Length: 41
Image (cartoon, rainbow, N blue to C red):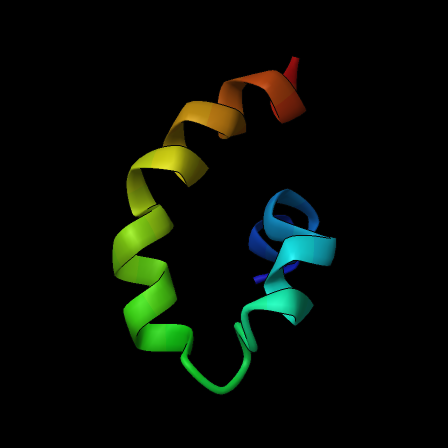
């Protein structure tokens, strides 16, 4: 969850990510996987 929070960051609060976690996760799942390699490397 920490990585996801870092990826979404400030935008997560703007869209009320914590309240809509399941919906936002589905929408941003692809984006998260795209950003993961960038964070790891």
